[in-house]
Length: 283
Ligand SMILES: Cc1ncc(C[n+]2csc(CCOP(=O)(O)OP(=O)(O)O)c2C)c(N)n1
Ligand SMILES: [Mg+2]
Image (tube, rainbow, N blue to C red; front, side, top):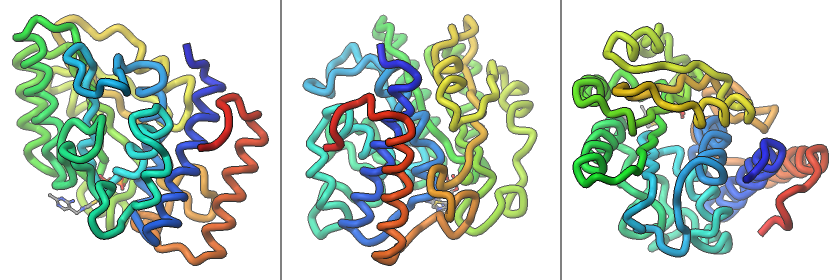
């Protein structure tokens, strides 16, 4: 089993791969990718039943990145987990590349749905969870939403459906970094109290620090309440791991200079050194 310390190192490697994509493509949705990358790392390295050699294995758990603009985080973790080679990410953002700003299930092994138009991941996840249950499969479905995504009404249709159908094989993780594309989520569209809203729809809720690996693992490994979908409210920091950019709206879409990229890489390498590299060489 991957330990918490190993997961922390793994997430740092994944952050370095995000920078590798920015180096290749020149720009991308950095802030939201780095706020949820710890959760995605824990999912793929500890929680999900997956088989990178057979991404469509019917017995797998499903993961959908509803907030598809955070795609670099998913690409990085899928590469680290062995779904494809990390060098494939060097085409990021290039003409004809499979690795575009939003994930494409037809081109990238391990991607379960095309997302990026906000508000669709949870309804799709509901259908998948219901389908798995109707097929008599034990698989679970996990999806990550952004806090700036929650104003989309389709999320709340999904929240109703999940509770109505008692989808206890469904987990929605809300990446609450307090920011969205143009500023504070509370200023653009206030959605708090988010936990109370999910609870009112009939969900079981867990609130955690979404950049704390111990808390992430404990929440993801908690047994679901029978007959209830689970919402994990993950309080995070946008651009977590890159001090200069943390908690800034400017990190939402980042076009770094060469010097900024070098500084960012240096900070993550220093973090890896402080953690001790428990995961093997950086690909
Ligand atoms: C339906 C829809 N409307 C608008 C957008 C443009 N958009 C892209 S990202 C974003 C903000 C999302 O905020 P949040 O989910 O909090 O993401 P994060 O802070 O993690 O980057 C918006 C409005 C979109 N992708 N889809
Ligand atoms: Mg946000």
